[in-house]
Length: 182
Image (cartoon, rainbow, N blue to C red; front, top):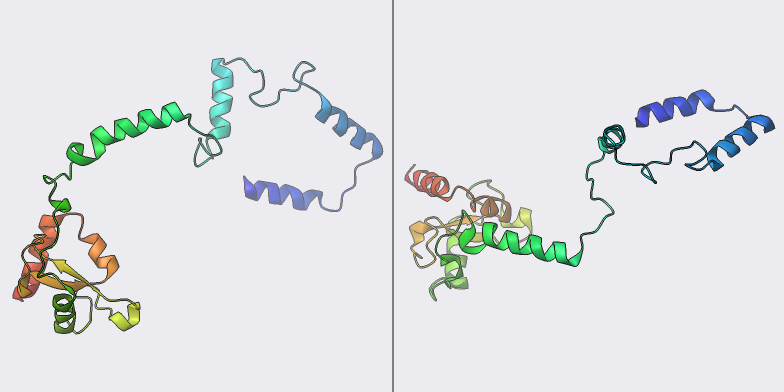
């Protein structure tokens, strides 16, 4: 649609309207709904034809709610529905609340530095160094058990790789165990 506008603009470039044409255009633009000019969605009854026209106009839009706002009541209803279905015990990722358990006292900065040094300050997945990244690497628990701080259960990962390990945990556990055995 944008290409068509540009093409039409190029065709009309340099053309000038006569005063008579300008008057006709002005008059047409000033017409109201009652005088025969249909302004989109202003006073138009909801018939199948108008619904079809409206859906054609909305077809190219990315978000039909853009610029519109939900009422406070609607926001509250959506929030409550989301809490029951997608959050906490209703979530398919719920693992009995273990994410709220604290890390053990052994999992401290000294242990993290030891792991990063062992891994040569390099992400064990993408092989980027702390110098390249500009931040210290994260120490990831391979078996996702916060209390298992054995050296063979910890691995250095960058933020990007570490965030990927939050999905498909069983697969990542097997992957890192196999990687250590090689």
